[in-house]
Image 1 (tube, rainbow, N blue to C red):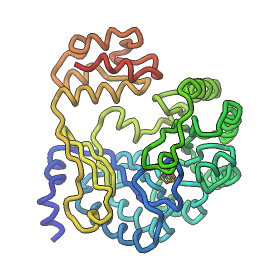
Image 2 (image 1 turned 120 degrees about the horizontal axis):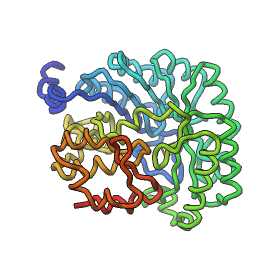
Image 3 (image 1 turned 90 degrees about the vertical axis):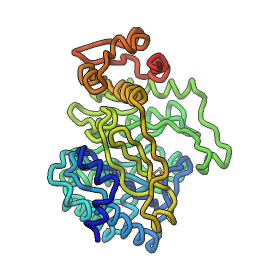
Length: 375
Ligand code: SF4
């Protein structure tokens, strides 16, 4: 039965011609919902998560055919699952981890415990991404985070004691009630954790989030820009490399999984709301639990991109990092001459060619520069 289904699978057919090296799996549950968030998630319940676990197992068996170089378990909150569920989920992925070079899981401090850390070790997870957001407990409370900064410090120490040497922390800025002084203290507190990687998120008020429904506004754009500059200055002064618009890393600790997105490689997304990119195709899984449980066809959006759309997306993604776009590889892939075809963008004063790569020297205004690459 399974074999028969696999032969019919659209992904199986694509797999015959494409090797996918990167896997993303979305866990759609959180223990509580943060007020700024409108990701694909539900408040955890044992019954629903158990049904999801059975369905996700089926999806993995039907669609995973490769040995992946990077695997990323995100959410939602993967640590919202019970210990037994987490162990089961990771065991479904085990057969595809023989060549893994980076295996990340997202965690929240309040739902991470020693048993979960042991489960991570058992299944070869070697990178942790922790939702920290702020070190100010009042701010954390005001966005409905259920941890304190003390919890963060304790859980980082626990992870270190189990040998985790690649930990990333999420930091939010432009939050209501956050001024420059509070932000500066948060940056100092996060620096004291000596993390290998830091990801930045500025608050965007989404319509469907609790903040959106309450009419909470984002901070003024000028304040947001000042905050971005403060973070940039303090992190780079402390030996972090600003390697992507919103990401900083200690040397050699850049996220390999996220670099695959920015290098425009193919990836497979599993579970509700997860996106995939395979060749010219993009698709996004349904966010609807009912459809996810009852239907074989769980793709909501299915886009086929023409050559010039692919070229633009490739440029847009690659210019996000300080490593830029490999010009020869691009020319070969699309059978074109990048420097002449996109000369208006290439001639922008913030764009340079270094060691065969096209690089943006002012990531803060990248979106503005990209307009010049639109044909
Ligand atoms: S920010 Fe993370 S933990 Fe909070 S509701 Fe969104 S997905 Fe869940």
